[in-house]
Length: 253
Image (cartoon, rainbow, N blue to C red; front, side, top):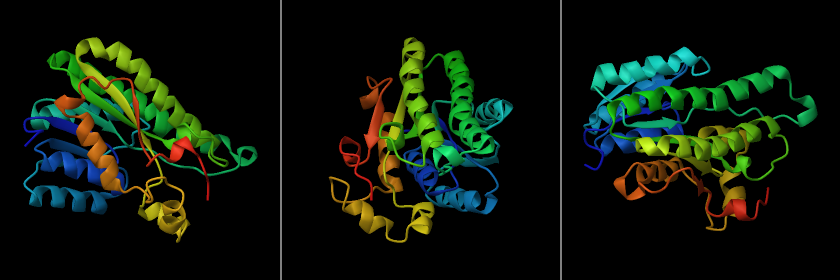
């Protein structure tokens, strides 16, 4: 198993993308600290799938807008599994609203979780990784909206663009410690939320993505798994686009 002996924190592991990431890493031998916020039943179901597959996982509820929560997660990983090798800062929230209708509450919600949360998650994880002296991997969930301007997603897009820059900056700062930092430019993805908002989501996006199909949570999980392998050791400070080439054209439905 390619991740045997390694330990990962995966945030927002109760839903599709986070669940796929946590499960994929766990099946590869990685012990998982899986977070959720108010979704205990969903998180428990993911943990049960992981354990059934022979993996190790501990589930923890955390409000990742709070800086202290990130240190608690690191301490949980160290206490339960003795080390920390990987951080996948996947937690995020989307607020869709025209710019002129975006409120301070909208902004604070999106910025506090998507950007502040990822920043301090990386800080807490990096401190533990540096103390171990064996390097590590930090991965942020960014988005095509951080590359392509999408109407109605100004606040969200700003946070996702900032994560791309954060990965580049931290890749330079943490690289000397053997820690690589990258971001995922996640494109249109087939999941519960998108289907609820747009029942014809798959057909609409299949027609726009150059590869002819919308992405899946497993596509994202496979990219994360690759970035965590030794073969990806020289990929650092980069945003890996997982969008089938859509961001090269930016066509909207």
